[in-house]
Image (tube, rainbow, N blue to C red; front, side, top):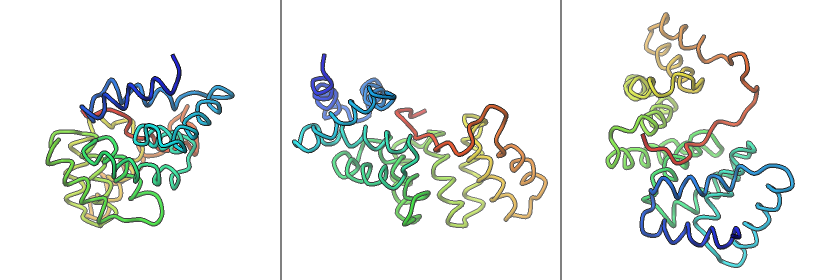
Length: 206
């Protein structure tokens, strides 16, 4: 009935099952409020955090909220704190690795360590393979990057970032026709919002 009560129930559930998809979606829903309602929700979350209530869940919500508002550095700070509290929460590990790769200061080596560990637990996840592929591109490991990105591509056909990463990797491998095609697909399509923040991984673990 109140946001505080809702957060308390969610965090109790996550303490027993950190990767529960229904609970994660409940958390994510609290970050999708706009206007005055969103501001009120954000203020309540900050007050709860200041009182030491539901720290992991609140940092998760505030991190997603910052990400959706294109403040990647603030999002990274929140996800770092959640990761310390819930290192086995897969969506948090994945999002933190992405933020270590695409916000400053970059830490590609740590991002790769996080993703390697995550993929030991979820070797068939296209979302996690896609993230690791983008990290491998930043590290210049072109063939390894292509293997991960091509695995993930059927689930990420509409993701310009996936195509841009493949374009760069194929270009570095001298496969210019494939690089050009992926570069074409990486361009914004009609209806896309220019400058939109990259979408966080949310709660999905396909």
